[in-house]
Image (tube, rainbow, N blue to C red; front, side, top):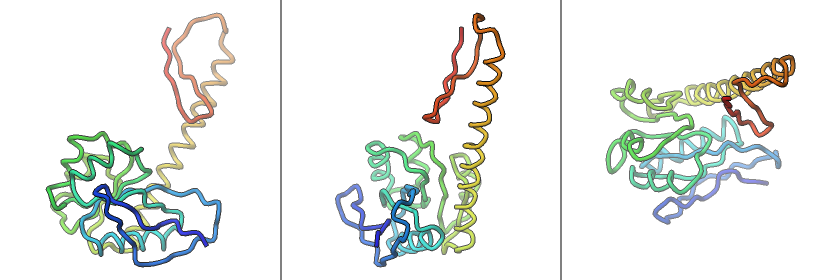
Length: 192
């Protein structure tokens, strides 16, 4: 049995143990790496349990319980695939994290307050879940993430195919502006 979510060490060096064991039967699963920014242990445990019920391929790469700890974690680690972020943390609003860090991954805000809804969508928010988190709403947030991911992956490939085929038809001796693609999933602009 493989456990995708295990005990994790937060930035302060404390181990946070999740009080459940959920096994994974797929040994070669592609894991979605998530960061949880939350200062209440029951909320963390409920969120992780809910995520694993929806899709066992989640890996919690970190848990931060304050603005400062989140800033440190984000500056020392690669960006996760998604962040679940409470808004009111022990040392302030999580929006302060964005003043110190560039976050490019999708964010699902999780909070007990609806008054921050509009402000949350100023950032990379793909959903805003009110606590206690409803399992169907959490499932919808994950579905939204996967749909967006699929859309951009599929359209990125189609764009590169179009441009590559279009470039082949042009005279190879002419200098032109365009887009260069590679199999690594990156796209480069070039100008002559």
